[in-house]
Image (tube, rainbow over all chains, first blue to last red; front, side):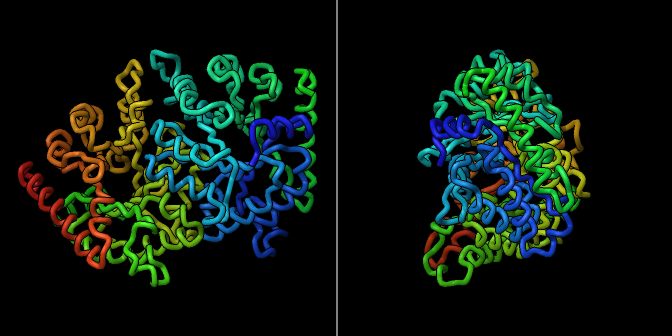
Length: 277
Length: 277
């Protein structure tokens, strides 16, 4: 379990705010791994071994595991168990349902005794409001990461609707911040929208932001830091495909490390520039 | 697979538009079932046997199965396999992610060959827009059921925001109807908001609406029909807890049948009143 204080400590210690997204697609991993009993787990283990000193979080996306049925869920459980305890473990599940149902999603991902998974944090979609978020907060010290402004094309459809109180995504941030503090809530904000960070910081001055879209989706790390960094860093920047699929040969783990190292070096420079380290 | 035409035929044949929600919680099922190898599956089988001539759809909510880990996923797969083919099979998963990821959720629930599950329909949350919905539409004949106006307390937080073009939920319906037709798209609209149905029918004159909230959540079937029924019926009304937990003794399946029968009779009367049968 990583509290806000411990997370900030890890960022300073590792000179990094990198999250490695474990969106492991069995069709994209190197062929030579396919002889292992669980090729996805073997792939993840090697990626974790190669990157854990360079990142402060790992984020498997549930969809990639669910797509492989029972075998996939087992790979996810075993991957969870392999995650280093000094890193924030985030399940990117984007769940959202009524209270009674969200209680069950919380069990699924937070209650290790029953399901074998005890992630530190879960991503949640806000459409159903308060009761789709609060059930997760009953678990002491666990984090909820609410979708605010995503990096996809479809973000334009609803997130930028004017609500009379700013855009929908701004209203989501303001409202959600009345449900819990910056020690329990983070927001997803896509890196492809870096100029929006100034705006977001008006409503979420202290919350950590989980930022996808650097790398494969084309967002700029420098821009994100310029507009989004706080005195506590306040950023967890995720890269998935650009790291884990840096090579699909036998050197995939080394290539992943090189990619992660390059990002960590850029992050170190940004942390220094901001006087955080 | 149930096309729109076949669904309407089933409604007329069974004189019912009832969906039974299989939100099966292992802590709430009768004790005597606990000696079975898979108590949840045994419970579901008996509920299905007792209700399949009275309903036209079944809807397991994924959360209840995920909360039991690997064992729960196996129960869900085996429950899917047991569902009668003349009923619409809906997985209530409320997923929503970027296109690349939604492709994987579609595989998880639609690609029977890989995961053992080939549901006819999936519920999807609209916050991430177009690319969180369209990947499911690539599967010929499968349905996407988009959250519009839900029956929970939290629906007030965002769904009723004024967007300059009506409430957010109205904008969701209008926008989504540009992505596919009423033969592929349905919307979730809570029964507790029956007066809103008139409004919703302006934007969704032909879409089937999946209506939770009758029963345990207190919505009125009569009101829903008054404001929401179309010449094709256009309604699938779900009841979960009021049916499956009608009794927690050995007579649970008979009690479930009695509850389903009572709803079917009310539905038959409404279908007659509207001249559909």
